[in-house]
Image 1 (cartoon, one colour):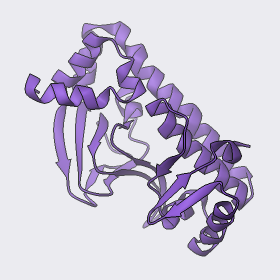
Image 2 (tube, one colour; image 1 turned 135 degrees about the vertical axis):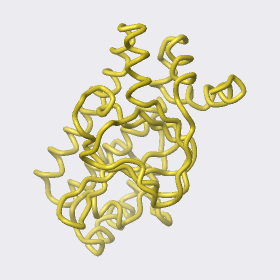
Image 3 (cartoon, one colour; image 1 turned 90 degrees about the vertical axis):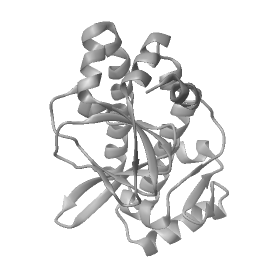
Image 4 (cartoon, one colour; image 1 turned 180 degrees about the vertical axis):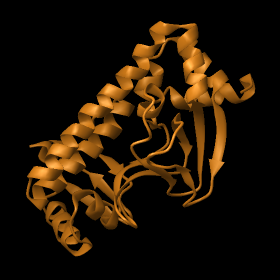
Length: 229
């Protein structure tokens, strides 16, 4: 990627805590080695169980991460907004990808292939820990999400999942304030594992308590503390 492209991208990516905290040289190596790619809405970017992987960050649009739970049935894991990095597991291991990656809208990504990642690490092994830190932080959050999703009543599962989705977004941007999450009622029903009708009732209960505010295809978290309680 030439410097004309790298400057505005660097500014955008530094809004996220993970990239902003990287050594300047590693930031430059990632930008020099990565490639810009565009995908149409609903286009498959990567498939669960396939190799090789890549580390990617959303520049524009929305990307959804999903898991196949049964034949022709998928469960939503997360919706990636601009500035969100994903695919760290695939580049750090030789194992197949854990999730499928699908463009929820038309998207533009910055893609660091596994081969380019390995070239960076071979040239400077100490940089491996920065990528590992990203993966371990995410792993802890996803593990907590799994525990909550399998052991709580629907209302508690919803509150826990909203709290974790909020945390993923806030950890990346380094703020602690009300924010919007790009999830529809159907999306949240898939994550929590209830019907859309049940989800509608649960969301309106939280909205009536002032914990969230409902919008079209979005949920605004007003009281993170109430969700985490």
